[in-house]
Length: 79
Image (cartoon, rainbow, N blue to C red; front, side, top):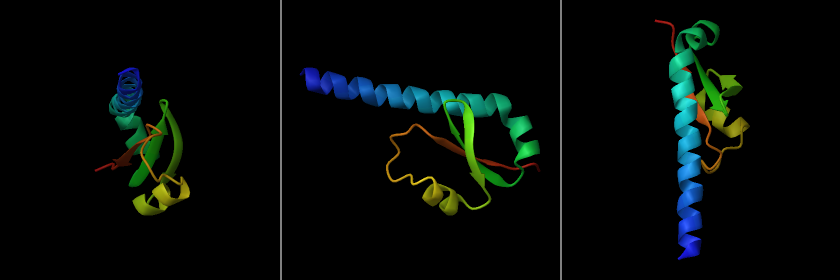
């Protein structure tokens, strides 16, 4: 039972970090769209870690194969 509890806690921690990154994006969106217009922006721990105009290239370059890193990716559009 402890293994299941540890797994659930780990999973919930990752989801909370991901949600925190998306909340940060929401509060910073106006600045992001000015600075990174028409680009995908990757955020981890409330910090921009990479950006690209091509989503697949960004994911590939970051070597994201499973989404355990709690990295939020948002498209920034200034329209």
